[in-house]
View (tube, helix red, strand yellow):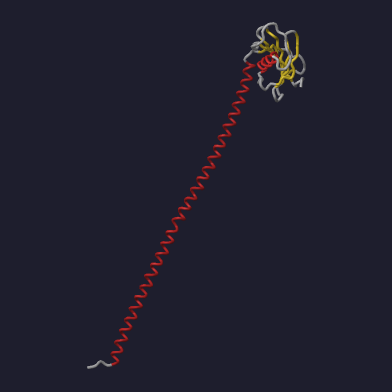
Length: 219
């Protein structure tokens, strides 16, 4: 017996419908799989891009931190250097003042009457004569640069406590046989002195009296 034509048509139609459904399902599955793959790739790209950013950020933070530490270290070193320099200058100043004080205070002094109203303080002391290079009969040479002037300046510095290399000699004059008076000051002219000296044969010039002046009367 032959199948009816309608039955054949129905069978073919059902077969085609099943094939279409199967194709649709496979296509949908492929699309879903493709979307999943694309999503995974995107996630992988984004997660992989974050790491360099973190590294860069961390590196930048380290650079900034190192720069701040370096700047702070330089400031501290500068402050230490400034403090050290200040301490050194103070120490040098104190040493200079101490040297001046020792040279004048190492001899016991005694107050005496001033010679005029320009004197604020007058005192005598048992200063030793400076060592001389002169021999034989002595005649004072008042010329600049003479051996007498060199030794008079040294003896005057010893009696006043002034720095010989910075002391200013304003006047040196004869005050009697074998005696002179020297008027001197420091470089700033804040300390002015009149020093009386006498010549001791074979020993040199010896300070015998010092007067501290209100003002330099030989300037």
